[in-house]
Length: 122
Image 1: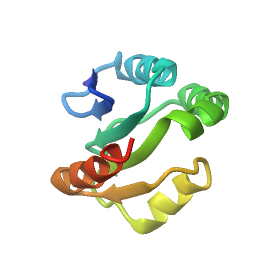
Image 2 (image 1 turned 180 degrees about the horizontal axis):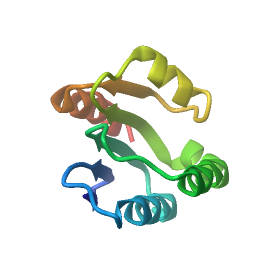
Image 3 (image 1 turned 30 degrees about the horizontal axis):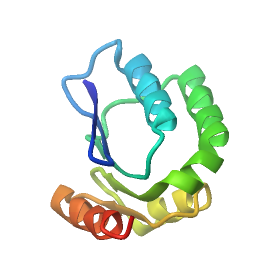
Image 4 (image 1 turned 90 degrees about the vertical axis):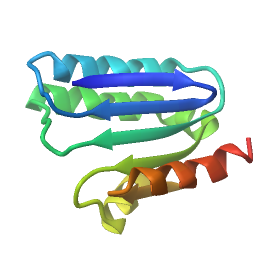
């Protein structure tokens, strides 16, 4: 199941069980919504690790990364990714895409604290 909450400069994208056939489209549509957000924001992504994208979905996601890079660089103040097995290496990979502070963790409370610190500076 994919959900996107947009509130007070917080974008919270969840991709969690129960998984459904419509998840890929919902996830890609949520990325489009995040890319359209016109204010400063922080992004929290929460993935359980079971949802997967098709090859076409991976390609669409990559095109989205490329198309939104400038907007994210201006508007997104920080990104925190919560997922099982999260590592610093994972965060480093995303730091090659975007200039803002990025954290990867398995703990949602830790991710929220990281983002709150960066949201306070906007």
